[in-house]
Length: 111
Image (tube, rainbow, N blue to C red):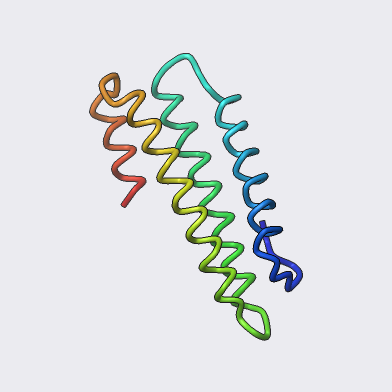
């Protein structure tokens, strides 16, 4: 999600971001596959998409004539926490069933 205007209404920004995150979670649920490897791949794909959108948003905010560091901080806090919650929830539900390769995929993506 790229910020185009200079809207400083943080509640409006929060609603837009929550809608985006809900869409990503819905996409993850739709991608829910039968085998665990695909589940890990789907989770990491959605996390990567969120990360990529965050990078695009940060670039757009900092490219403004007056860099919007407040918006960068806002999005970083929200998206970072959301990614951590998604990973934590997946880990709590599937940690015991993961094989070594899947565990390495999760650890590697985090670093």
